[in-house]
Length: 234
Image 1 (spheres, rainbow, N blue to C red):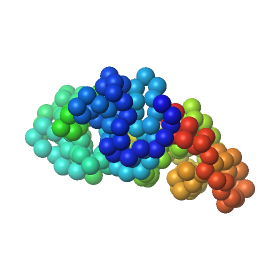
Image 2: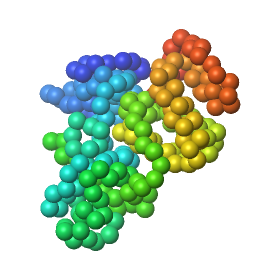
Image 3: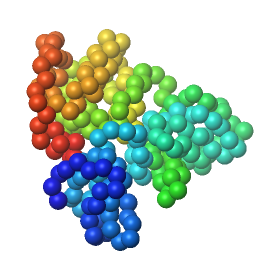
Image 4: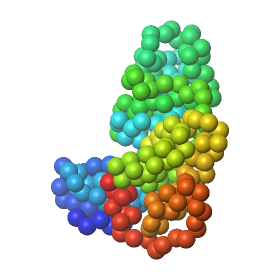
């Protein structure tokens, strides 16, 4: 199937076994559920060009506690739906009356999407050594659809950014980015990420960002290229 832009409701396939992210099945046929780019490898998926973050199991994201109930931390995950972190998914055994002591309203956490039900109940987990409460650094938000461009092909863009700014940078799939390092480096990282987000749809971006990080300001923007679609779909 060619790479092409689709809108919600566009027909994609008669093979329901190929239905992947960003699609839905109706009467034995697969349709687009998002405005985005179609990609078919093992599955047919639609990569959103714009819009909100739609979680999938296994996504690593940054969430913020918005409410605490008897057994759940309710999380803002920058999606149309709330995320639930059950007390049993915290990395150590704690009692319900201790929940506020470990994660309070307003705290931000690096979490993983454990499961997404058909009714969009989003279950989160911290039971992984990579997952933790965020207690330092700065958080910024970008449009979730721009995350692949910020990471780059095979991680090339984010690696270049980390090396140039000497910062640790984690890019959540939901568009929330966590940056730690010296203040000057963090400022430069944020400035560069903003530039990438603004020019994500343009050709020659990697070269321009490289020059920008070396102190050679540039504002020239080439015309959109099919290469950009390839990068978004990797």
